[in-house]
Length: 168
Image 1 (cartoon, helix red, strand yellow):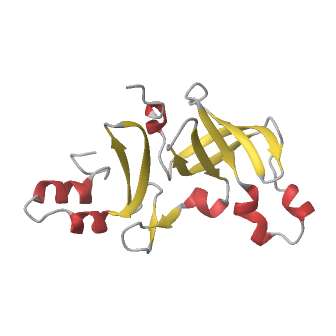
Image 2: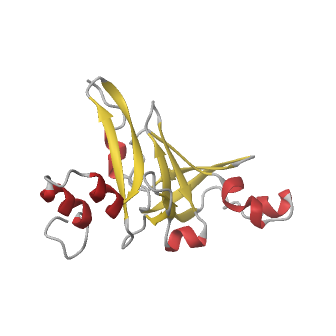
């Protein structure tokens, strides 16, 4: 089976990236993510979503658009892998670059996706065909939902990716 989304698994929400601005659009900008130029991604920054509530006019919002050809530091906000091409939404908002937060899909509270945060990203795939989706959860929320008899996986949910963990 050909899985169009395989290369995109190198990216995940909360990950810092560098992107080149390719073009301007009324809603934001299309970009190319450094190191992922040949991965078949559609990457963008939705400037309206990020900044419209902080600006008082359309002209003020347009002034925030990074110039075409410029390189920007960004953070992966979300990835959509339902069908090709994989869609990657980035944020350049300063607070997101510092610590991207998202709503936990289990409890509904905010969780931090950036390094050092308390979030995990779970990707779901099927052997029936390509495509996948991801959910964001607190480590603790996931651990609580794993059967108590499966203590090893519960422990891994709490430790995976931690700098001092033998798991990651």
